[in-house]
Length: 403
Figure 1 (spheres, rainbow, N blue to C red):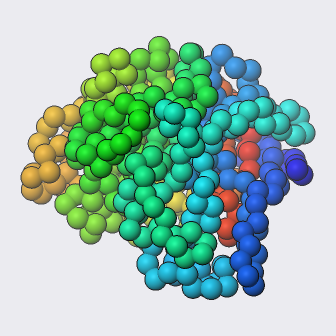
Figure 2: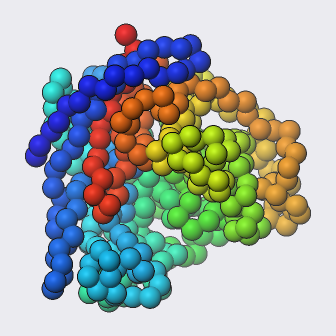
């Protein structure tokens, strides 16, 4: 394992015009090589789909989580693997990969992985990453269809509780899950109606999420999660606007739904509206299509106050919002409402947001920032998702400190 520590000079323009020191740890740990007859694809570890700092841990210890593992589109198989394996769908390069939680300790010049926790079903069997939505078009590296089971997960964010357990956000379901300290699934909370697709699961299934969440576009489900200080409530967000009523609407809309969930009552108690910035405002990306903008992370910083991570690829913005003006149970949760919320041009319930940080003002920040471990207002740890190095990108741990 090779570690490089790089000091980047720069000023982050925030609401208070603070100057931050930025230190970046590059992770060069080789993960695995995928070998075919005539070609080898080298992969690197990809641990940066989400990050979290547990309140009682030292400031240099935090958790991260992988997603479902390295995968490519069928159309890219000839270029990357030397052979076209399928016409439509996804190839899972490691079809037995189990999503994993990492506990990491940072020191001055390096890092150390303290623990790896693989996600398992209630019986201790490893969970893999093929989702129910992809059951008919998922292949291994030999071009064989992968048999679907009800345990397919695509984790994207996590929080840790005082009893050692975790809650994670999962993209493809879309769902949120409660895990034991050793990674076993205790409970999966899904949109009403989705539980029918998970028959045979050996853990508790709750269908208490609003049914309209199931209108999320493919691969744009629940991407972020946060926990209240008293650990009674979970906050979570969709990654993008819902495809409500259709994909055309999702691509043009900028309104994202965010939620507050009561853990003990097993009940969503609030639904809030967040409006993303226009795609062209993410200067380093220069994108025109609105669906390039995504919500990738959130963290609690006060009572119902959260920092939201809004990004394209190269540019990431951090906004502070307060969850208020809930629309839960209103006409906007009814799929039959026309025009839908996502089609509406005038909405009265959108949360106000305050810019805290824009990475456009820093040099050499890696693309796809997807995790924030928030220690305090002046001490953050960020991490990016390198997609397991398929495009030869590295994972970086970025430490931000205000002097």
